[in-house]
Image (cartoon, rainbow over all chains, first blue to last red):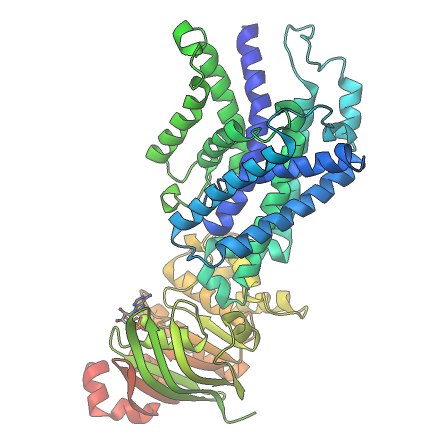
Length: 317
Length: 239
Ligand SMILES: Nc1ncnc2c1ncn2[C@@H]1O[C@H](COP(=O)(O)OP(=O)(O)OP(=O)(O)O)[C@@H](O)[C@H]1O
Ligand SMILES: [Mg+2]
């Protein structure tokens, strides 16, 4: 029983990580109906920017470093959209998706050249410096530690903090998308591009905004999870697959759905893999953990292409 | 302001290799209701798309709107100058609420009377008020058409382009809708260019009319005159 509870807790802890990467993917999908395969790598490079500002070069305050990294990541995303993607017919998805795949490899190799494919030491944990969440975590560290607590369970306090940060992220996105004129225009373009032009929306600018927003939040997500999954150029490789499954499960155009999807994927993964790992032969396969999100993706595409809360079918990708 | 709010000269339009318009010329007088009639595939929708320079169609020719040459202005700029377009198939935002659709209609406006205008169109179409938080895609066809028209009027246009507003609606609703167009035209002074299959009804509220045949204007004149024209009667009025 304790083991089962522990698997549920582990699943939710990982789920928060998948949610954080799935959310920006959904933002890009909403704006463009395409899957940005470079999402994880752009987030990774954002986390490295923050690392450079906070540790390697300027010893900046981590909050300041995060904000700066988010801005640079946003500019990078907008630049990629403007220079590489804008001139292609957005309804023809193949070339655009191939380009995002190209960006994926370039960014990954670039980061590898600069920082090596090794986990960085001394990665600062943004969570501890956040108002409210940080204070709360300091106070609770005796109960939520990486050790087993008195109930026999291991709850990492930064996972709890991560869920808190995720909720703040979701609220911020909710305000931006639902309470601002730019957000309304973004949802307009997402709903009907032609009608958007007819109300005077400059669609190109909104696409830029969408990419900027997604990359800024992607960077924030990567900065938040880096202390957990290590900061290194390949940190997002497997996470991306889980995030994709999470986004598809929740509905590719639903921000809240992606957040929930992350937890569901994490939970199912932990519980199912927990049982699989009891089977000796399977547990020795390194591909086994990745099998699950791919199978989930297949099941969603077969039975409910719009996901749980989505409106647009994945078939349009 | 000049007498004509819209002047179109030698308009040619194509989709890729397919030429659709071959030199369309038309004028719409300020304050009037003007109708374009024509068979399926004649190029009516293409004409309206070309007038507001929608990227889907590539066109050449000169278009003057309220005295200014807008031939090279992009759609957003044209809307900001006071043209609104209700496209064929309505052009609402199905995932957004009725209220948000109306707010987006006012996207180019900078004044603070947007909420007053929303109330105004809610009075004109009370059913929209009842459905204000409902997703536009879940409204009935008639309700969506009312929403599409209100959405277009939210930009306070000088010229309203309507592409087959009666499509798919019950006859009784169509009559109401056209009565509303007439009322809006008279009360607000909004000039209207309406593409319509329901020729009888459209001609009854219009002052002038054009007949489009395979990409060029075949007939034009005052609405009353076209209504009595035997050729028009036979082709479009089912006489
Ligand atoms: N997006 C498009 N791509 C290619 N060809 C098109 C496109 N839209 C319209 N056409 C072609 O252009 C011609 C004129 O079409 P248009 O839609 O302007 O006609 P219409 O007069 O509005 O017809 P209807 O009464 O059926 O709406 C048709 O032959 C049509 O096949
Ligand atoms: Mg048409």
